[in-house]
Length: 21
Figure 1 (cartoon, helix red, strand yellow):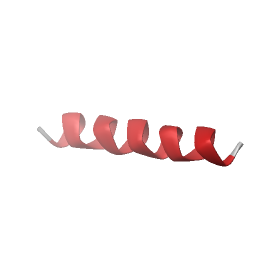
Figure 2: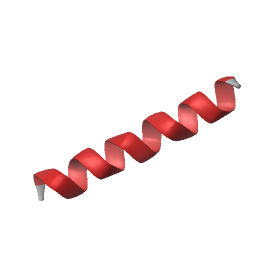
Figure 3: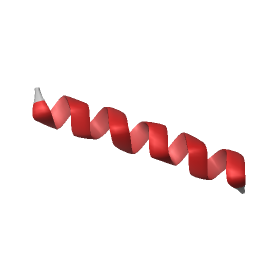
């Protein structure tokens, strides 16, 4: 579950970056 949480965090970060751009 921890690995999934990390992946989700990375995906969310990428989405935030895309939205900021």
